[in-house]
Length: 264
Image (tube, rainbow, N blue to C red; front, side):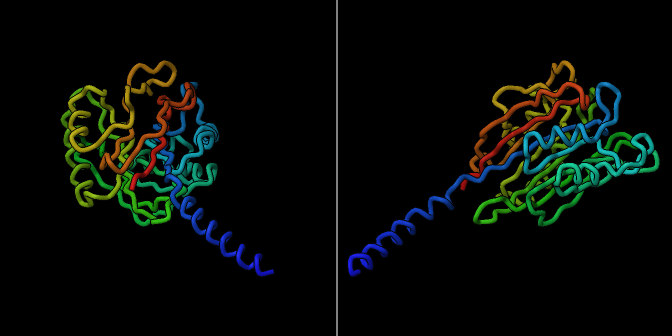
C-alpha cells in the first residue's frame, strides 16, 4: 500500500510533464482562394454544388471567393454566398462592390474560424461602374492563445494598364498598416503576373507563399499565375504546402490551396 501511494505521484508528475507538449502542437491554417466566375464553368454550366465539392475536398479553414453573385438575374437570383455556406458548412461573409442585374456582385469569404469583426474596403476605381474592393476580416486562430489574424480577400483590376492596380496596392497597404504587427494574409485574384510592377510593389511589404509561379488561369490550360496568397510579417508564417488544384472545368480559374503555420 505504501509503495502504491509513492508510485501514484510519480505518474502524476509524468502526466504533467507530457501535457505541455500537446499545447505546443503547431497552429496550421488551410487557405483556399478561388475565382468562381459566378459559379459558371468552362462548360457553360452554372453549378454551385460542383464548386462546393471542390472546396470541401481540401477541407479549408478559410476561403476567399471572387466574382460572386447574390440575387443577380444571370444566376437566377440565387444567394451564392449563402448557398455555398450551406453546402460547405462554413460561415459566409459577403459584400457587394457593384449592383448588377438587379442584385449584388462582389467578394465573399467562407470561414470555419471565429469572426471577430469584418468590413469591406473599396479600392480606388479608374472606371465608372467597375468598383472593386477587399473584404477585411479579423479571425481567431485555432491556437491556445486565440491569436487574432487579419484576412484580406480581394479582386483587383484586369486591364492592360496597371495604374488602378498600383493604386489598389497603396490602398491595401494603408489598411494593413492600421495593425502593423497583426499576422496577416492577403489573397485573391490580383490580375498580375509574378514579374509585374504590381507584384513587386506588393513584395515590398508582403511575402509570396509560392516558391515558383503557380499557374491558375485559364482553368482548362493554365498559362499564367494571377491568383496569390501573401503573408506578413514573414517571421510569423511558415509555408507547409502550396498547390493548384487540378480542376479544369468548374470555373475559368483553378483554385489555389496554401497551408500555413502560425509561428510564435
